[in-house]
Amino acid sequence: MSETLEQQVVENSTKKNNTGPFLIMVGLMFIVGFLTVVNQQFQAPLQEALLSEAGKLENTLVTFITFAFFMGYPTMGNIASNWVDNKGHKTTLIRGLLMLIVALGIEALSAKFADLPSVAIGEGQVPQAFFIFIVGSYALGCAMAVLQTVINPFIAVCEVPGTSSVTRLSIAGALNSIGTTVAPFFVASIVFGGVAPQVAQLLLPLSILMVVVGIVAGVLGRIELPNPMASDSGEEIDPSTLTKSIWSFKHLTLGVIAIFVYVGAEVAVGSNIVLHAKQIGVAKETYALMATLYWGSMLVGRLCGSFLAKIPGQTQLLVTSTVALLLTLGGMFTQELWLLVGIGLMHSIMWGAIFALAIDKLGPYTAKGSGALMIGVAGGAILPWLQGVSADALGDWQMTWTIVVVCEAYLMYYALVGYKSDDVEV
Image 1 (cartoon, rainbow, N blue to C red):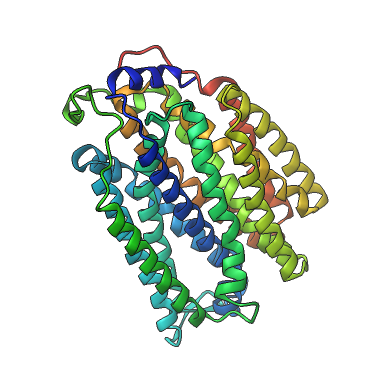
Image 2 (image 1 turned 90 degrees about the vertical axis):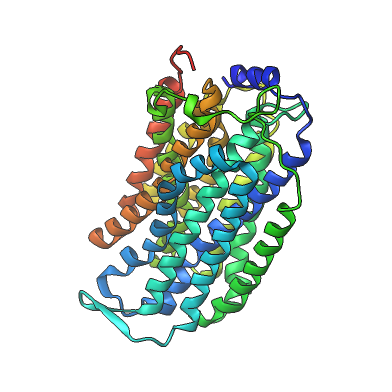
């Protein structure tokens, strides 16, 4: 699968042990996972705090929080890959962290302006603070796109003894999942403290997070970060020598679609299961537990996935997408939402498998391929939001899970056929 790419890196790199930089990237993956799910878990509290008078557009508006976040990925994907080519990995990472501080600051502003008058939308009223938060959510997604454009290809190709690209991505995914697992607890118990949600409660925790990210950026600025794609002499690849269109690689193009539907399905389950459970009268403590266990099962799966190096990525993807499809059908037709929680275990190793398959044999085009894959992350914006729109149109969440069924079916196709790369010169 990704052996050709890894052999190329072994032959063309300085063969230094990149364990230290790899661990730095793994730590950044924790931050990415934590803040991504924190932002998603703000949906239900902000629905109660800001959208109680939004009328029939309540689900459409609240899922727009996640929509705005993930639309940051296609906005910044190509820009970030150009930054990597022209400015290097370290500079791009620091830029991403600074953008992250700004984004958190904008979200915190929504708490400062909670008393501004509401805006009439249709038959409902929506506070201006909600729209400020939406802008912050979009900026947060832009920052995450920059970080992940560096982190994922670095992890995939950096040389760490005794590991493969899928193994390294699984290890990083495990730390990412620790962040996603603690995020629902952080929102429910620390930010809002189990009381009736008020937007003013966002100010202190978001300010603290800004300080933490600032410290991380300062530390990173003092650390040497090698380029794992450098030549034998340590020179950077000249982007002007890359003449092929990145979209000429069929397996990458189909991989972008695979990332689109995978992230869309993952986020739809992780964020909208709470809204579905809330609608059918599930207790707050129970649906908060559902979200925690969903992301927690992804942690368990990624920990196990790190030991699956001998199993081809396409096999891992085929098995997990098939089981996920069956669980989604079961949860949809029975409204037994605990079945949807189990999908987290299946989703846990999909990112690493898809990413490694999609950038396989790209060689010097790997950074650009990674930027292209960030465009696919827009699925996390569009599909959960379409599910929210569908829930408003149908008056119920039950049949909206058909969207996730279609996603899992495409991932089965990619695992069977779409991942195969053309034998082309790079």
